[in-house]
Each structure stands twice: as C-alpha cells, then as structure tokens.
Length: 161
Ligand code: SF4
Image (tube, rainbow, N blue to C red; front, side):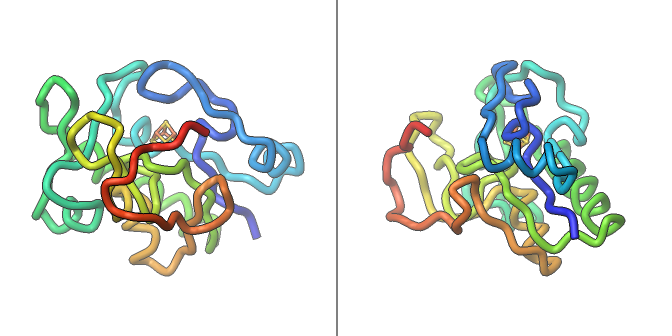
C-alpha cells in the first residue's frame, strides 16, 4: 500500500516561502515508488510563494466545522482554500487506498498533534492542521516526518528541524 507524504518533505519547492523541507526517510519512499506526494495548499489553489497562514481560534477540525478560520499574515481569510485542499488530498488518498500519511510537522494544513498557535510568533498549540484532521476523521493514520504523532505542551516554542 502506498503512503501519502507532504510534497515539501519530498523535496518539492511548494512551501509558502518557495522552499522545501526534504526528509531522508520520505525521499527514500519516493525513490522506492511507495510515496504519493500531496501539497494540500497547492491543491487548494494557493500560489507558491504565498503569505504564511495560521489557524485562528482553534485547530483543523474546528476549521472543517466552521468554528475557526485560517488567516494569512496579511489578514486574508484563506479557510476555503485550506478546506478545498484538504478534501482534494482526501480524494487522492481514497482513490489510492492509502491508510497512512507522513505529513510536515506544525503546518496549518499538514501538522498533526501540534500546530502554530495563530499568533505568527512561532509558538505552538495542541491540535492538527486542516488536512491532517480530515484524513484522521476518515481513518487515515497521520504522523509527522519524525514518524510519530507530535506530543508536547501547549504553547511550546517551535523547534527547528
Ligand atoms: S501544505 Fe503541507 S505539503 Fe504543502 S508546503 Fe505546506 S506543509 Fe508542505
């Protein structure tokens, strides 16, 4: 069975800043033909590079339920883009029978267990990104590139990978 991976972990320059975050384990999965690369923010129609975004007032499940928003640093509401990208990622996973995903830590789309807290300060809170939340709601196991669910305390500062 193939594994969904965040496209930026596979070395694609799809991050908000136009960069990538290549990860050795993910690159090996790509080399073996086991990975299906997804970038939910790209699938949602956002350009690269783009303003960084964070979830305000909740986590990914709250955005999906309409209880929280995703705003970019310029203050624009990009919630619909994030939701659209999450459902596009889910459709890819369903079409390929994927039950496991390795997604980029802390991202408002891909983060699992911990995400940036909406203050654009680097601080973290507990919770999942929008895509990670939707995949989990649909029975897909999600881990970060450290290959484990992200633990830790609310408000912890982001580590540099
Ligand atoms: S949305 Fe996910 S895959 Fe795309 S750049 Fe952000 S962390 Fe990487």
